Image (cartoon, rainbow, N blue to C red; front, side, top):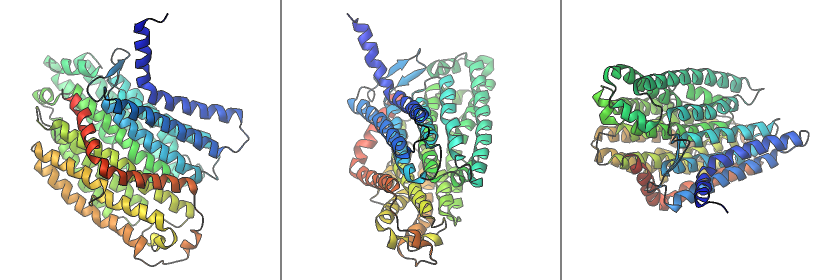
Length: 506
C-alpha cells in the first residue's frame, strides 16, 4: 500500500510537468531521427514539437487556473533550489505559447533544410531552459538554467550553415553571450562570498548582515544586474540583438525576441525582489531600482530612435524589441521600498510581456513568410503586399498597431496598466518617457502598414507571392487571434499577473 506521504510527493512532482514534457519531447525528436535517419520527417518533427509545447502550455495553464500557486501555495524541490509558483507558471505559459507558434511556422521555413530534428529539439531544449529559469530559486540553478537556454539559442541563430549572415550572427551572439555569462557568474561568486548562500531567501538574510563585506556584495549585485541587462538586450548592452535577430532565421528571431527576453525578465524579477530586497540593498549603497530606472529610460529611447531610422523591416523590429525591453524594465525601475503598488507595476510588466509574446512573435513570423516568398526586407519591398496577401497583411496591421500601443489593441491596455502602475507608485517620469516613446514608435510601425496597404508595388517581386505556406499562415493567424482575444481577457490577465507578483512582496 502506498503511503499518503508518497502520494502527496508524487502529486507535487506533477508541478514540474511543463519543463519535463519539453525535455522529453526534445529527446523524443532525437530518438525518432536516429531510428529513421533517411526518411523525410519535417512534418512529423514539427507535429511532435508543437504537441509537446501545447501539452506543456496546457499543464501551465491548468496549474495556474487551479489557483493554489497564484495564492502563494508554491511547491519547492531540491531543498528550495526550485520553486513552482504562480509567476513561474505564468511565464512558462508564455514560453510554451511562443515555442508552439515558432515550430509550426518553421515547418515551411525549413522545407529545404537538412537536420530539421536538430532544429526542433534545439527550440524545445531552449524552451525547457527558460521554463527552468522561471522556477529557479537559487543563483546556482539560475545560472545552470540560463546556460541551458542560451547554448541551444546560439546554435539556432547560426542554424543556416550555408548563410554567411546566419553564421556571423551566431558567432557574435555566442561570444557576447559567453562574456555576459562570465560577468554573471563572477557576480554570483561575489554575492556568495559575502552572504554564504546561493538560495535567494538566504542571500537576502545574509545581505542584511554582511558587516565588512558590503562592498563585495555591492559589486556582485551590480555584476549580476549587468548580466541580466545583456540577456534582456537592455542599453548599453543591447548591441548584439540587432545583429543576431537580423542574421538568424526569422522564426528564431521571433523566438529569441519574445520568449528569451521574457525568460531574462522572470529571473530578474525573482532574483532582485527576493535575494536583494530594495531596502537592504539601499542600506549597503546599491540602489538597483535607480539603476534599472536609468536602464529603462535609455533602453526605451535608444531602441525606438534606432528603430525609426531603419529601412530594413526585420532590423526595425529588432531595435523595437530593444525599446520594448525598456517598457518591461519599468516593472523593476518603478519599485520602491515598501511601495504600496509594487505588485501592481510588476504584474503589469508581466502582462505586457505576455501580450508582447504574441504580437512580436506574430510580426517576426510575417517577416518569415515574406522571406519564404523571397520578396525582400525593406519597406519598399513590402509596398502593395496587401493586394497579394490581404489576410496576412491584416494580421501584420494588428501586430504593428498593438506594438505601438494604439487602442483598442492588447498592447494599448498592457502599456496603460504598466504606466498607471508606475504613476501610482510615484514614478511619473517613467510613465511620461514611456508614453513619449510609444508615440515615437507609431511612426515606424505605421510605415509598415502604409507600405502594405497604400504604397504601389515598385517591382516584380510580388509575383512570387503565389503559394500559401500553411504552417507560417497558421502560426501567424493564431498569434493575431490571440492578440485580439486578449482584449476582453486583459482584465483577468492583469489581475492574475498582479496576484502572482504580490506573492513575491508578501
